[in-house]
Length: 472
Image (cartoon, rainbow, N blue to C red; front, side, top):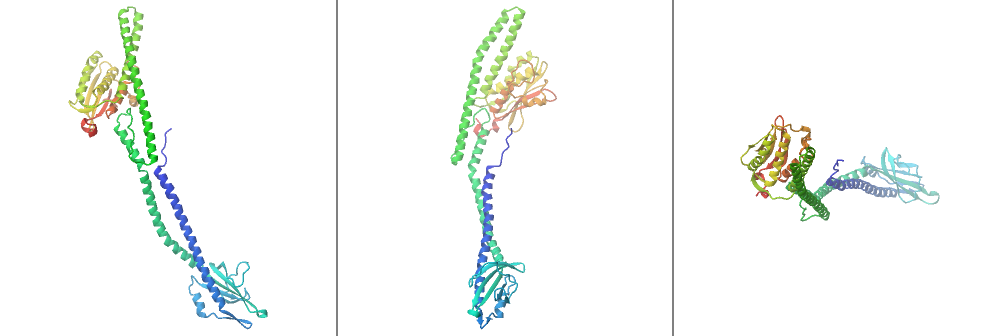
């Protein structure tokens, strides 16, 4: 099942750090709005309390009546601001209108304490107001009178003050939020830098290690947080365990191939000797089958041994690739003539690559052997060395045989895959070629040659194109 990467750690950290900050910022704005409203209401309550007491002091008893000493100028001052007008009403007994604004609503059904202001919310002309109420008693006995004074103020000013206060708070809060967000973002990036360095180091180690069979070098971090250091130590332990497993596998393959070569060589020799001494047709036929099986087994053991060698550490040196190709091609000339195949060389006369002569010879031997085996009698096999892309040289073997279908081109370098049932192969030759190409920092090439046939080989970097650290 293909794993799909989730949300990056950087985005998760930013989300969990910035989202609570946004929630707190909005909550802070709402609380600031509520506090501004409460403070505005407290200011209105103080003003109304003072106003209702002052107005009550202007009312004095005279005989059986009341004298309201409230000049017209004071009334005009109270009602001069339409948006924040202060209205009043005097009633005696309480609820019986005498003076002021008769539209002021009565208080809720509560017990009002005499000489103690009572504050409540109401609506006048569909606008919210805050009302202060004060009951006062005058006189004694039969001349005793009860007087109620109400003073109301619109809440529009309270809301305006709260809005202005919120606007004044929002700007610094917004600036602080932006600065804090920038600091959080920079802190997250800085905190993730050790992971970025760890990723870059692993990538560089993978690029320097051209051969995937070689173990990756351990990760070295000079300074890193404890969590990243623990992660690097765990990865180093895993790499060390993988390297030990690879070494055990190589040693087993190498030892097994060495141990099998001697008895197989003896079996082949004894079978050939028995064939030479035997004259019965049935015995010779069976011995011939034994000899063929033993030769195939010996070839397989040889290929396994070469595969183990190609995956081991070897020293590279500069060499002339065309010269090596010509020498190998000459070694196969006799076998090619015996098979009725025209074997030749075409290409450059001098191209310097950084490589291992024995490994490159083995790779070219496998390419030529594969071509001679499957091209068929009467075919033409050509070894070519030429420059492909800048800094890259191609070492290929081309034939005009039956070739391989395009659908199976990707299977050519798979281990133990064979393109036909023709006896004699074991399916490891081209896998060895691929291992050797990777060891030299190159890659393999497989394509149809002209109209038919097959072109198989390696693309190798020229010595001049190698980094200074990899040059001789």
